[in-house]
Image 1 (cartoon, helix red, strand yellow):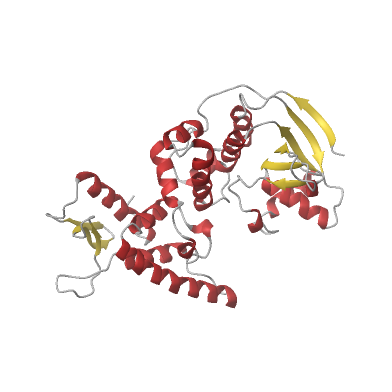
Image 2 (cartoon, helix red, strand yellow):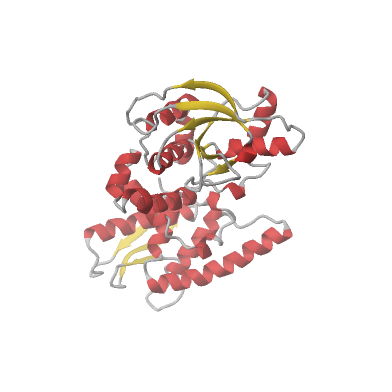
Length: 344
């Protein structure tokens, strides 16, 4: 039986501390303190959580809620080493996870909503000479949508959850909890609708393309968005698929040989190069990156890139509207970032 440790009511605060911005992930991580995360977890439960109780649990009786963005199967001793060392130094887990009771599973009594790495680390310690380690958790009553928001706030402070994982988690949640309404979802998560739209677009990148990267963790949102936009062109998508297959083979060979895989910037450069054939007026190979309009005519061309900046040509008669040109320019900046030529 789980041992009850303490009982208290959840805070009923509500503000916009969970607001997502377009700041770099590293900067967001630096500004997220443990106190902010804990208070955010309490706030998101407002209205759905009636009571929160803290227990000491056997992790074997606790399953992982599938609505969380983190891939439990990808956790290892290496990427959980910080938690393992912390638990050993402090004599156990000090920051509780958030779980809820389940009644549809004879093998489990609870499921983890927030605290997947803590669950893995405690399970690992129990299997490696520390059988008395207990999984500390707050037992909450909340529905699936509230559970998703709670897990999302927890995950925003974590650097080890990739943008791809979060994007796919958002795409699934959009249909399950928000009826496909992006504005409603953005309001509930306290994020901008434009940022959420980019995340949902990134979720469309097929696994075949993601396999071209050494790890999903290496793929940032901005270049990934440029990649998915390029896939909207069927001819570009076909060329990119062929390049992605070649890159996947190279990455698999590198892993098998124990050698470093190609970095994400190089993979993105090759995929974007395949999307936008580099040809001059005579049809010969060129160093220019060409971004075509929806009609297929050249709209913007990156003619040169150097230490002083980039030369970008705006083509007349491309048929592209202002919004399409602005979008193409953003794609150019993302492509240059991916190729290691950041201008910002």
